[in-house]
Image 1 (cartoon, rainbow, N blue to C red):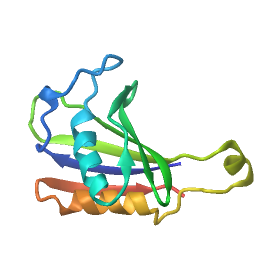
Image 2: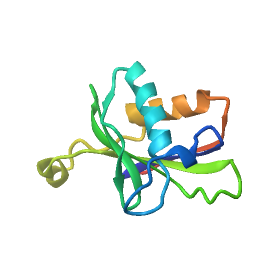
Image 3: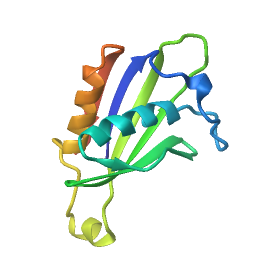
Image 4: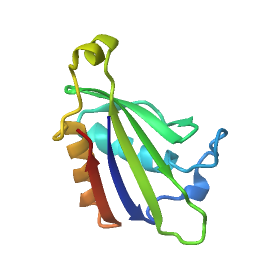
Amino acid sequence: MAHIVSFRTSKFDVSGETPNPINPIAGQSVLKWLRAELAKAHYTATEPDTEDWGWYIDVTGNDGSYLVGASADADGSTPDVEWVIQVHRHRSMSDKLFGRNKMAVDDPLVTLIERIVCADPQISDVSVERET
């Protein structure tokens, strides 16, 4: 299950992103920013890479490892873009079989991402969906 953080901002330069060769979906710029912010909280993350639904980074911290994806449909008609960040917790096959290591409603990484996004004055309309 994924937790979703969505928001609106003109903070990121979508036109300066490396083109996603699979689908023309933005996400690299927001993940580069988020990667730097997560490093301040002692999380490590890979460089952003492409997927057919957008961009992703792998994030590791004391509380586990995650796939964090980002995407936006930046059509260029407005500088204010709606972004979606999705957070998936990595689980082994035995974790899945035995119902262990599930993503909690109060997952520390999701809570941190929400706090980072809400603290930025250039970001508005923050919404968080926590699946259980």
